Image 1: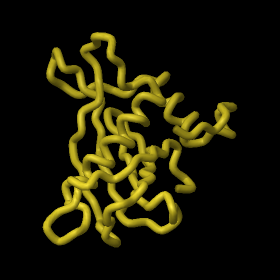
Image 2: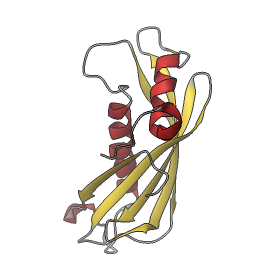
Image 3: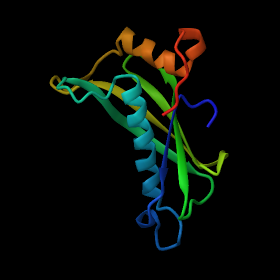
Image 4: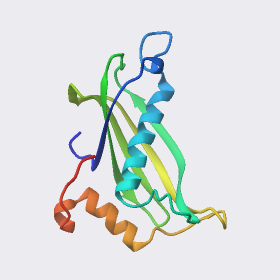
Length: 148
């Protein structure tokens, strides 16, 4: 999970398997979501306080590299690989906690900062950019690296 600013760890559930005995393909997107939300919490983008501004997922993809089977303790990493005016690209990795350097799946998603009242995308504010930069490059920003 080197290179991922946020890493979450959790146990795979029995019900996440499909009839072929491995994790159902749709579950990977749920695992990506868990890492994405942890990342949002880390950069103060996922607030429970009412706000018209928030993230919205514009696209998502997954490359399945090797099957995940129960029982399995998983680690899922998230990082921001690119920022544009109103959106940023996130990258994800899924691995077994027993072999965190052996990737089972890789994914990506484009997240747009969205004004839910006006129903339009908005520019990413400088303070959010700085918080993302602090997660992605802690030595440059003066922030200490922290894993979840």
